[in-house]
Image 1 (tube, rainbow, N blue to C red):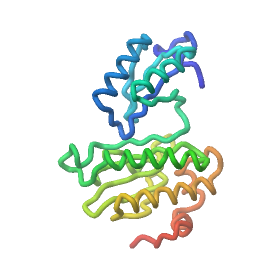
Image 2 (image 1 turned 180 degrees about the horizontal axis):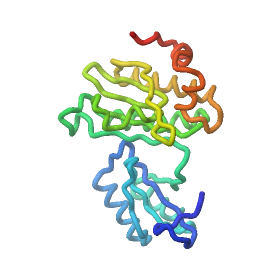
Image 3 (image 1 turned 90 degrees about the vertical axis):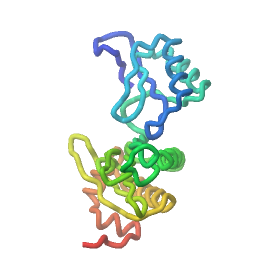
Length: 228
């Protein structure tokens, strides 16, 4: 990982530590634990990221292991943030806190996080996977510009695949709608398994769908063509 310095200037080798906050959810006890560890190790800066993570910035490389252990002991699993790889789930407040929410994004976010971690142990995903979960079609979870997008509706979940918000943005394609949680998670896993088996190394889902075509992807997953 490249050395970092919170000011952006050249300085001692340091890194950033990212506590796991699935869907951007953190309890008061976890927040207090993060603050306590940050004070204990004199972390110079904490940053709330657009990805709904809390970043402990400027941790000396030689102290990274101790910071990770301290967070884990406090019930807050964390990892060194490299800026690449892995999976990340972001979610809007959903039906628990938003009057427009039609589905429980918090519960879905927890399930997606667990599924993604289990999948990562059993398959080698070609690139990083970002997930956006929105409780209604207003899409505050940025679902259509994520590799996996889940959008809540009155009849269940819509699952979209192949979105990207990077330098070459792409709107994700819908693979299914009106899905209950289990069906949405199952379709997500099938889409990711096909992606893992057929994409090139470091090829994100957006570029993969562009290369193979959404019709071929739907056919490979045994999905009917969407109504015109």
